[in-house]
Length: 256
Length: 258
Image 1 (cartoon, each protein chain N blue to C red):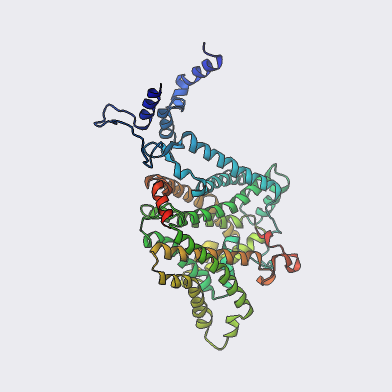
Image 2 (image 1 turned 90 degrees about the horizontal axis):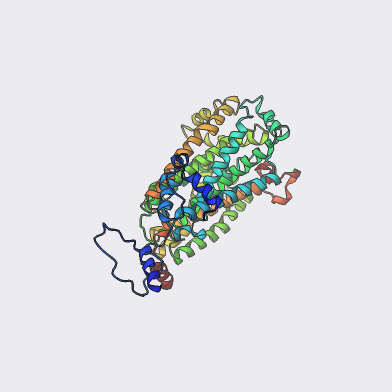
């Protein structure tokens, strides 16, 4: 006799409403496990099956996924901060104070945003170092390595533009020092700096420019290129770590 | 019973399909590397990969959450263009460049070197297009040794160069003796290029592959970047002068700049 639980589950999962949402059955068999991957927009970035070798912790350390997760955390906490933050030199600092003192969980949201940002820069750098040392940039993955280099630069840009927004002494002088470096480039240097700052020194124009770059332009660029990056991982045959069969590894280590 | 299990196993490894024009005739015991692994050593992404990703999501978020409970993001006084902070530092990922600025003309430290490094990153996969060893850490034991030795070299030489230039300031010594172009641009540029290339030049004697040359150059670049960043971030105090991190004058805490 069927238990009440089973009957209730069946009633729900066989209903027309449920089946309009999910185009696959319970993923406890190979057919449905494949369908989960091919019919779900979030899962479809993954192949239906993956090689065991590419899942080894000591191969990838999960650094790419961790970078993407931190980007997600930054989006969520960043949107929360946007509800309060005003990008005006007269108001920015006081909204930061409000976040710390009066706004419920404001300090926590700001802390998580800042620490995630530092951690994301670190994770992205380490991810690049991992890809380099495992030779995962080699053909056919050259183009995805290039996308990765651009993603690294965008991550640095996102962090740097966000650095100014609290409008305290730390951010003001860090951006002044940072943008001064750019001005030494011959011919274009000082022009590039003026365009970035919206004037000759860091001020209201700079704040609104950095804000627009930080909350919309760079994140959109990141989303676009992260999508391309992940798609290319699949198109180029998954992680490079699965490509060497076990026995060749063993022979190689014997030779040495 | 045993036959049934065997048939099930055959079916799992090579599922029969009516459209196939070929068929598995027999399974034999042998020492093939694929024994007991199925045709391609794969697992279904669901639920294994999905679970790994959920765990990474929970772990990363938990780490950031707990750290955020323990340590607050810094917030100093309101921005004041008339009062310069001392020291005034760039964010930590650019402080390595700021450290370089102490030793040479900004054109070299702030523009040429970063451009060359980004260009180097871009051309890596086009210089080294040999697929051998893709997916293997350091490619080979020799590659591992080259990486290790290059790293040790940079760990020793880079701090030495920083301290040396800090003690006998090249730019000051040549001021008035040689034109700025030589003392600030050409000479420091040559020194840093030679310092970065020396391990590679030595390596060239051992007939390295392109991968090994790039392993050497990348390692020197990466480790030097770490050394310069640490020096600028931890060892530079008021006036951007060198101090020990725990003996900063004026109670300056280098960690407060995060």
